[in-house]
Length: 419
Ligand code: HAM
Image 1 (cartoon, rainbow, N blue to C red):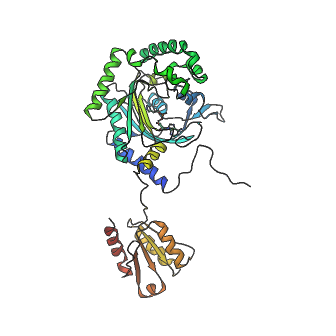
Image 2: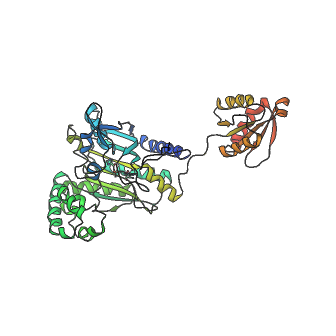
Image 3: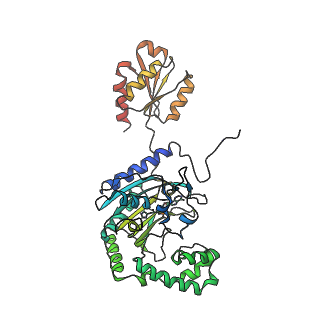
């Protein structure tokens, strides 16, 4: 029988990388919890209708949804992102506003798998419901930026745009439709189809044949209402006040349809692959209403964990955390002494591992090397009889003998030496 392996676009995240993923989430939690965001865990699947609000002309909805009928005949979908779920939860639970939440976890999109693009990918993100203040837009962006700094990333660029209010968006969409229709013969087949559904999404086309027409297309900034324009100016002023650098990109429309006013994206210039967007977000005033709730402002972002770690690799920052195993017990007397030493050290919080199955001294020393431990504790027949143990720091090789009763004190001293 042939062995199974992971489905396309999914991966096993093994040690030590999986520890790095966990640390990534812990650092994110630290950054956003100190700004008052509470952790929430939305379900992995929801009623398909929740996700249809992401936009009927978006690839996420039309091509990439993992939707199916469950055994009870319900039409459900694996979540392709978590913003819609957060808004659904807001409508369901009606928490007091401002409601500031953060989340982490996998999402599912049936995309063409490649480097930096997976069918199961992780995000960390925040959402705030019930606040219209443009200073919040800047706070949300500042938190993403602070998190990148905590990871050690320096080659991250922020692009920002305003898509205006629903009315502005509609007016702009109408103008765009007329413009693109007058150049339809110069558009790609795909963009012609997109145009019938949502002309804004044509701006997002990466196809070479569309670029000339897109370059001369009308600009959203000329269609913003006075209020949306003022809001955007206030966001930029607040970013300036916090010394956050950005580029205004009035072609930035993003891949989901719920955005209003502020939209933004973070790109890693250290990544050379096709997928350099390591995070993005924006306002989605109106989404809560569409999900059956009261008119409520909303804003947030999600950062792609998989892709951000690729950016960390490219910049050589945020390595996997070091092994938690500080000591490795090499016991050639049958293993009982190793069991006692491990129990003793672990119960006072010192990481320790050992070999099993009565392996040879040589094999156990190799295992000690592989474990990433800083010291090995060697117990042979002579040591056992003399009531002693041999301690060998892995780097210097200067081993020394201690009384068995003094082992804990000696190891504690080694922990200090290695700090
Ligand atoms: P998004 O731009 O679709 O936005 O995804 C955010 C980030 O998730 C992307 O910048 C990218 O790093 C990562 N990502 C997306 N798809 C994949 C994939 N197939 N493989 C690997 N990484 C991927 C959202 O999801 C919105 N919910 C963000 C948001 C929150 N807007 C407001 N609040």
